Length: 190
Image 1 (spheres, rainbow, N blue to C red):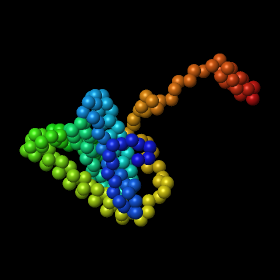
Image 2 (cartoon, helix red, strand yellow):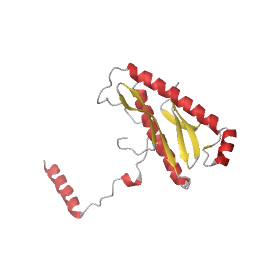
Image 3 (cartoon, rainbow, N blue to C red):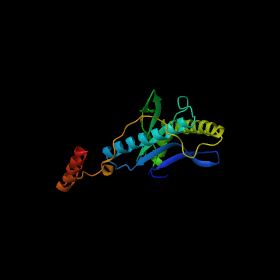
Image 4 (cartoon, rainbow, N blue to C red):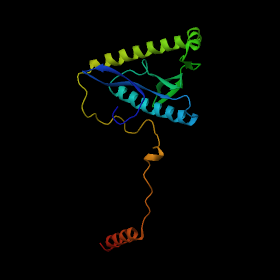
């Protein structure tokens, strides 16, 4: 996955490679806290937004065809639609209820009577149609540049770095201040 840790990625084969991501899914255990799940959701939106930017750059029409993102917590799934509105990418819930996966025979009988199976089938159908559109669009491109030019002048989505990635504060020492002062004095004498 080249520098990212995601749980499941959907790729399509086009131009002789499987390196064409169309969406990524995140899953947590049923014992995960709400804060962990929120962090996973924000990560999922951020990473899928980057995938969406890349597909748009390659010529994929993301207004008509868009990803639906699945996020899991234990045996429950939530689905989010990722769409662009002008320069903003928004993620919104695409189902009214949470879809749950059965873990035993009693739950299987309830599952077969619930809306969960229809939602899962519609999700699979949507992802298939989305994947076919992306594959057809990318196959029309003869060869993508190996080093693409900058895509945007300004980032369309701003995210703050995680606490672990922030640079540590370095205190100025008195010697460092003297060096700066000496340098300033040299400039004044010129």
